Image 1: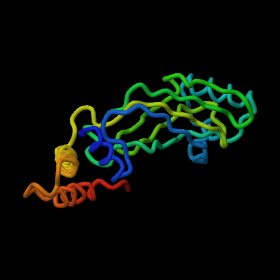
Image 2: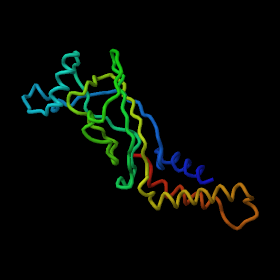
Image 3: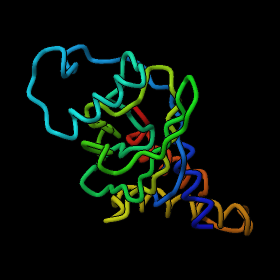
Image 4: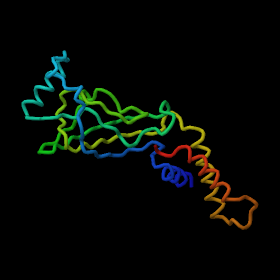
Length: 187
């Protein structure tokens, strides 16, 4: 019953909450023109220089540097954690690459889901990016979510036992749970 209520909470707000492992797939789009490295004579680290050289030798035009995961903390990002992040690039004109951890400059960030790629990572616009991660409220689960889950569990138990033989009002429990979850809706 608790698992069912937890999944219902996640359905209501449109986000995963408790620890999960999932793969999200994205189409790589857009490049921030302020982030072109070598063309502006900006000093770069040796890794960025080698990466840019590699990308240019392969004929890459615009390269993508940012990606945002859909699964992120709707509230209380300090209680949210990601782990086991792996990224596979399926390039738009052939070739697949498992991205090493050194190619990730930062992220994913718990509050935005933002991943920032190292300058020179060969990630052309139009490529597919598959990000597998484990995440969720693993440090602690916010009290309001625990309460909403308890209300929904009680609602399901009362409804299944015999709602006519008790003075408890399962509809009120359901209403209370939905009220709590309305503050958690995905933005």
